[in-house]
Amino acid sequence: MARVNTVLGPIPSEELGFVAVHEHIGYGMPGSELDTRWWKSPEQRYEETVPKLRAFHENCKPYGAATFVDATGICNGRDIPYYQSLSEKTGVHIVASTGFVGGDTALPFFERASVDYLTDQFLHEITVGIAGTGAKAGIIKVGVSRGFKMKELDLRIYRAAARAALATGVPIFTHLAVDVEPAIEVFHDEGLPLHRVLFGHADDGVSQGKVRDTWIADQGGRIGFDTFGYDLELPDPPFWGRPRQERLDHFLRYVQGGRVDSVLASADANCSPLGWPGVKGHTVNYLFEVLIPALREAGVDDDTITRIFVDLPAAFLSLQTPSPTTSPS
Amino acid sequence: MTGTVNTVLGPVPSADLGVVAVHERLVSVVPGAQFAYDVRIDRAEVFEAVAAQLRAFRAAGGGTVVDSTGMFHGRDVRLLEALSRATGVHLVASTGMGPEAMLGGYFLTPQTNPPTPWPADRFADLFTAEVTEGMVVPRVERRGLAGLAVTATTRGGRTATDESLLLGVARTALTTGVPASLRSDDVDDLDVVLKEGLPAHRVAVVADDPLAVVERGAYAVLTDPARVLELVDAGHAERVLLTTGGVGVSFGEDAPTASYADLTTALPRDVATQVLVANPRDLLAIEKR
Ligand SMILES: [Zn+2]
Image 1 (tube, each protein chain N blue to C red):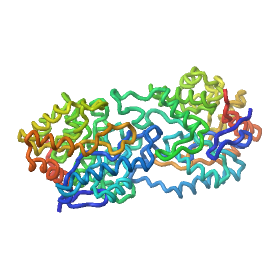
Image 2 (cartoon, each protein chain N blue to C red):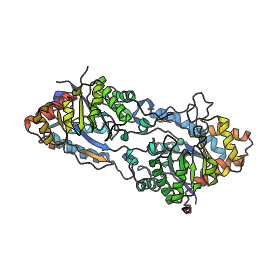
Image 3 (spheres, rainbow over the protein chains, first blue to last red):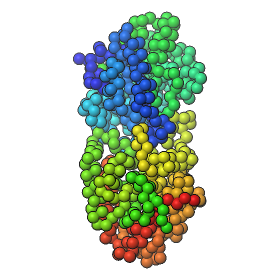
Image 4 (cartoon, rainbow over the protein chains, first blue to last red):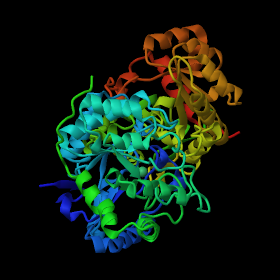
């Protein structure tokens, strides 16, 4: 049976329904919790979050259930008991991450840790639970530190993630798909097939020209079109924004060019950001309010839309012990 | 010199501090260790362990322990309050952080393009608010006022962010009147603080070269009573401080356990009165300019 770890326990992948594959309840850089300028009362946090999840739940109904994959790393404000209460009260399945958004979000204790220790950390969070909550992680987050260049610590985390993914069957999500050669080398080296890896943010504005996305896809890697909605047309766009049409065209080249099975799509929105202002008005529901209508207008049929948001993520998120690839060397 | 000192339970006249363990780490958590799968932080156990050490200190004549871990190395204001109430030992907590390697990414690679590390003024604002408005219980509340501002520099040479932290701590001390403390292997770090206009008698330094520190008029923090006596003999009695060098309870790294009680018998009585009572009293008293 194909199963997926959610914060309220494992569920069959058939129950996931519509999946927003890379989202955040709330993300903040480690240390932002010390700066009161970002603090919100619990009332405000629930007020900002619950209506978005309830609207998401409603929007997902035609597809069955609603699944929200939270890609927040260990030191970035990940808050499992809060996610559990949100999931329980709204009915949205929430999948939590182990791992780190990048080496520069791993705090000193983990910065000093060996590959073996990091592997054990991830294994524990996937098979035993996160921080005494009993909730098991459903994905492993890894990523590239700021500067578009893999650092030694980033690669140590990638290697540990590959080992934990092989041992447990959970998939890996990357933050950024730039400087991808050393990452792919690590995955090859560890024997992890690339179809277990979502190379995230391949669609963002600042990465363009630095992402070899078709080269990754040709090797089986999943391409993350997972910053939908961070459009440069916004009144105050973030630095990673991109012209709306350009991103859509990029996506359509995959969807209508015979590569639909290589993509996964999401909005990377924060319900209630923790250590930054967030982007006003941008929510997970962009997928329903803007993206899906745009896809329909471009002639993408409903079966394909279901494939992108239901079938592909269900297969990707299912715990599967892949047959290891053999090292090319 | 007398004045008031910010303890976790409120302002206390500096004359009431008694024997002071002046540069301690009551509870130390390497940043991130609180999330480690094999680190179990049982608050009741931590409380019992630290409370036992504080009670022994009090029974031996101790009065005050200064926690110099700063704001991002396991500081837990509510636990410190409960410890102080339960044991009768005054506890002084600190704001600040450092060196650079101990900081969170929020300060080093912020979500801006480019990700420019924090400048001195932002650190100064962050630390100053902990002295004037209260210390943070992350994302919950502010409680109590910090009694000093601390930082440390990278061994082998300070980084640009270390320098911002030094200046941030110096400005906090200047604005609020609390003392500054640094852990540093290069007396040039102290000079950075002094150049910012902070008088030397408002600074304590854990240094490899204590003589250079006292010669500049700052306080040298030592862990070896024999070294204290050497400096006293050399005429620096008024600028020497003694600390255990241990940790109450440590998570994420091995550290020697502190015995605060041992401090009370580490020095001859007349020296102890100067080094463990008078010097910390003068250093910790808030000095309004
Ligand atoms: Zn994200």
